[in-house]
Image (cartoon, rainbow, N blue to C red; front, top):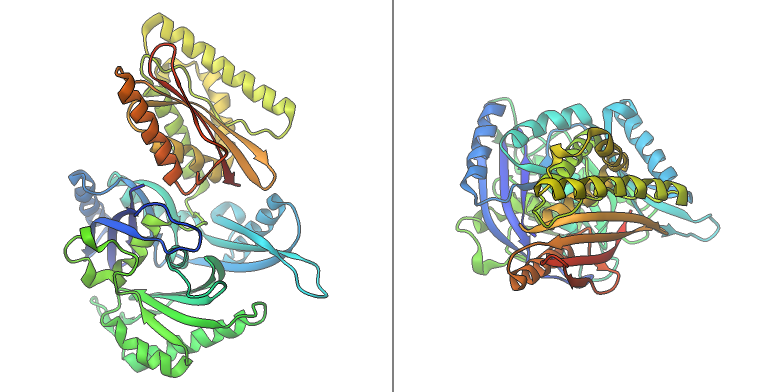
Length: 493
């Protein structure tokens, strides 16, 4: 699925439109295809950035679905080992801890957590791996405004450490369990992330980069000074990691927009005595259709490419923005129904049988009203549904938070023209969700309807949220023409 990655700092905005090159098996490197890229410099104002991005969006070459990496945002990242507890409790602890690290209230902070596996050590109670990313919500909203004003639909937000996580998930380690450190060097900030098998072990960013900022134009620091500073921080990071992780870091991978980045490899190898490489090659990138000029700036464009192809497991898009956009999306799904479409279904969050029954009754009320409206005058529109009937399912939808919002967005974004979502049910299934999708492909020609349904199912399979189907999907000829689509997936909570 094509997506635009936007890597935004105070000095440069790198934009890459890319998509994965086919499906891959677990443990295999993630190959991807780059369609278009651009680098915007001399960002004198937010208006300048908006106009430059608006020109890219208007040209039509870049996907409007975007993930954004924000440099120079005050943030915190941490890997924790917490006592075993329900995931909701672990997320609550991580959220509160993330806000306290930043010295902010929970309400002013956006925190995203990733809950990993269970670790057991002799003589100690087992613990659960929890990683959290935290940043100030107001700062994120302000930085995203020019991108939204330009017409891009922001699906997710991360920091350089999160973008490095995406990069690590695309790379292939030489051996299972191998620990690699990824470093992104920007003009005013440097980020370090340490990963094993695609999981985050350590993340930290520093308020210094490759440049001295005493003048308007950044000037690159002396290489030895920079190598000394970076190697000192890396040695400290490796030492910290050894307190709870047995394997040593075996490799350091460098990226970023630092000029002559490769000149850092030799001094870092000398100081750290481990392998150091720069991600300035085309490894993992489909070179056959590469746009002219991309190869020369591959290291600079790595982060934008990575978040476009493999978004990180944490998302710092503020909750209120996600919930608001989800409500608008729900209205849009209602509004775009064709004459053959029948209803929009909200998420059914089955906390208990009674709650599920109540939600189903609300959904059925929407269906009945939509059906009566269609009988009276053709396709229903969002504004045709009474506010009281519409309000309950939409509020129930928003209450599920960012993960539920992104789930609905993933389905809506996968739906090509002619496919209308009828219902989307998410039921708890142990540590995961069982997600059931019911949709309708309404096109006059039945053969075209079948192709449109197949296109929709392929898009769901390519989505990172719907990677594991629970059996083959069901396609049935509709009573009034078109194709009815039913599919189930296992999705991580």
